[in-house]
Length: 102
Image 1 (cartoon, rainbow, N blue to C red):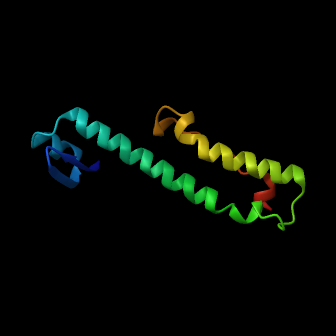
Image 2 (spheres, rainbow, N blue to C red):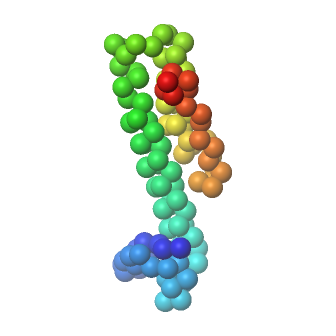
Image 3 (cartoon, rainbow, N blue to C red):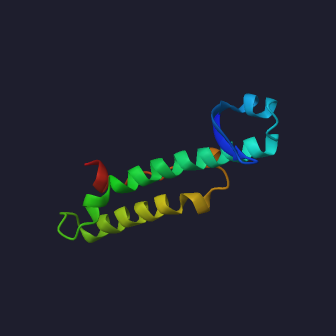
């Protein structure tokens, strides 16, 4: 897997993880960089899913109060993902409320 990281003032950009280790970057540093990259991908997806629902929380969008509450809860569940899951590999994405699938 490709990794980008900075170690001892040197930037390793788009390196294979094994190559970074082979040139002296400690495995723990590479693993932390990979973990941070994985969380970054999770946050990017989360942000996109939240943005895709922005229209539904506008006060003039035609949904009832129960549907609006479902959308609000969905958006909150998305925002809480980084604090809810211990690993990006264990993230379980919340199901879109019915009001967003119609």
